[in-house]
Amino acid sequence: MKTRPAMSPFPVSENVARMQSSATMAAMQVAEALRASGANVCDFGAGEPDFDTPDNIKQAASRAMQAGRTKYTAAGGIREINRAIIDFYQREFGTEYEPTEVMATAGGKQAVFNAAVTLLNPGDEALIPKPYWVTFPEVAVFAGGKPVFIETEETGFVLTVEQVERAITPRTKLLILNSPSNPSGRVLPPAQFRRIMELAAERGIYVISDECYLRFVYSPGEVFSAASLPAELRSRLCIAGSFSKTYAMTGWRMGYALAPAGWTKAMLKVQGHSTSNANSMAQWAAVEALNGPQESVAAMLAEYTARRAWLLDALREIPGFKCNEPEGAFYAFPDVRGCLNKGLKTSGEFAQRLLEEEQTVVTDGAGFGAEGFIRISYATSMEQIQEGVKRIKRFAAKHT
Ligand SMILES: Cc1ncc(COP(=O)(O)O)c(C=O)c1O
Image 1 (cartoon, rainbow, N blue to C red):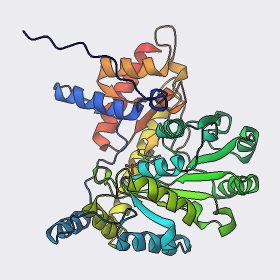
Image 2: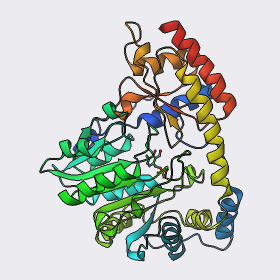
Image 3: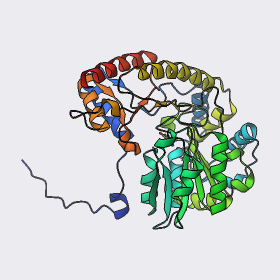
Image 4: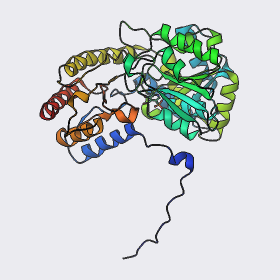
């Protein structure tokens, strides 16, 4: 048998060596591998809608393909998608963005990435409230910046202006907001959001507002975008938006950034040398998503509303569980410290053993900076939710 020559270890760059792999992607892969082995898996790990992309959106992509719209586009996207994004913000929030302030990106993730790498210099501090979406600190690290975490447990994971103020130092350059939040599902009340933006403006701090779950807010809450704030509070603001969740389009890789012209110009430079442009057919699909009928969004929201109500009640009945009310997104983020003991010391062990003993996937809160919590995605069928909760209950009873 031929032996392969010994390989020297790959000399990973320092910035990338400091990055952590994505805990949420890892949970998805574990679920996939288990399913492939024939196990009857209950998967609460997925951060993506279980719905199919609405047909009108698929048709638009298909038409674009047939019409030969299969070539490179401008780095920031076709005129039609830029216009559709501007019009959406005008319609919904009364804000008039200029074409120089908008760009289409390959998913909301690329918008966050573009925004951070164009802003941060080595040593610059990026304020990141806990619990955070796993990508935020890694992107800041990749850009050479230093993530500075803000603890928010005392306020039920809802960030306050006082917490931000205490975390600011002379090196603070950026604050990353995400409401509704992944993983907590919490929503920043608009008045609180505004006070935080006022403080950031006063101190000359840039803000990325990740509005990936913008439209998924449950009654009586209301959809709020930082775009609706007065112009003087938006001069250092980049909104990172996404089509992935709102229109069940995770695989299409479509997102956008809205930011002042100077910031957008820098982001276009980075994107022009990385992915060039978002997928051309997906851009046409996204035009239809924004300009076409919106019934599918309302239907998904209604279904999430019903699942959320059932799930919250059920989780609160599990001994050892405590669960804040998630006002948005499609995650519950229970505190499971009441179930931890000598045999099960961390939420990571909780998640691992739940997987082994009950073939049920949840995501360990530690990956989001919240040890002791687990994230449960209810972007899965009611049937799966009910079966999964039954398993979690059985597991908790066995170990508590
Ligand atoms: C908070 C948050 N922002 C951004 C994204 C990225 O979405 P996408 O790149 O699919 O548009 C996600 C995906 O899970 C997310 O949870």
